[in-house]
Image (cartoon, rainbow, N blue to C red; front, side, top):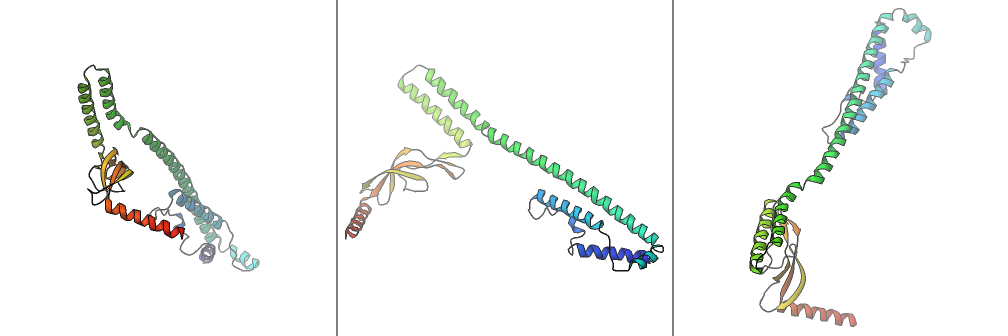
Length: 249
């Protein structure tokens, strides 16, 4: 009977020392919430250490020392059982702490290995692309070493250019159509412009440098020469004159 009362006192003392609902749940790792796994494991490790400290705190139920001494002989069996339970839980907490430390070490090794793999991938990710480009370079060197007329050299360069275009398409790179297309500031970069009565909207009339897309994303804009409608040019000139006159007033 006295052993049951003492065990109950220990449990009440633990409930006072620990927040509600967190006594047994403190050992569980919450890895589903998307947080940092290492932080979760360290929190669980702290919870284990706190529980061990709570186990070592003596229970003071407010009874006089004489009453406790008189009851000690009748509660010896119950005290031994409570002590055995406490030792078992301490051993379980120590084993859990050891597993958590090993998990932390494994996680740290995994993170380092992943970082090394990422660095290796970054350095050698273009290996396949370079291999295909090397074929184009080989043909250019052969063309330079070959003898022949200007026309034959031109035909050889055109073949090499087609080969390069095929290599680029293989990796999702395609050229942007620019000449005779409406000017698109998201695809074209205007480096020159002129007024023209032959167009009704801003139109690309010359491509100075070809632009490219890669998998529907802009890789490089086209550098173009843009023709502007004559009326639009006149209205812009009139607006600029009005602004200048207003500023002088």
